[in-house]
Length: 114
Ligand code: AMP
Image (cartoon, rainbow, N blue to C red; front, side):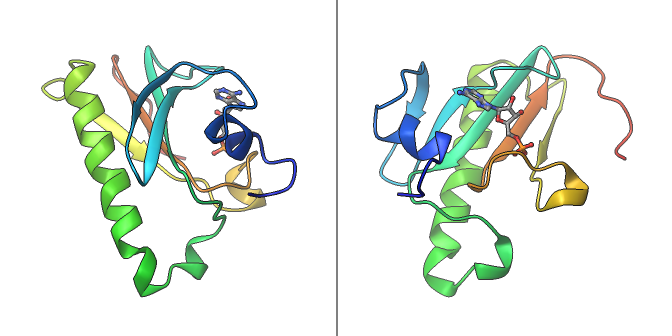
């Protein structure tokens, strides 16, 4: 567990959160400050920050995260209209939580990527 990591605390049940989906690898919650009508976060159970530490053992974790994102997009009814997955990495991206996560954004026409 990452010290003082908010997503680790949610994973451990120390901070209450509505978990929409969970499996052995990851869980999904709604973003507390949504940037679109649908804004979910797919978060691995294991604390992990940067993709440059993505070893072969973690390839399965990333695959499971994408699969969870696709399942949740279907559940939220945004597959046909479309959605975006994004991952912030480091200061210039504005990453606020140092625990890898996928943003799933949809439910309206999204603005251009920065
Ligand atoms: P990032 O900037 O990629 O690190 O995104 C972190 C995201 O986590 C932000 O969009 C926050 O709004 C969101 N967030 C922070 N704390 C919580 C929380 N307790 N529950 C849900 N989302 C959160």
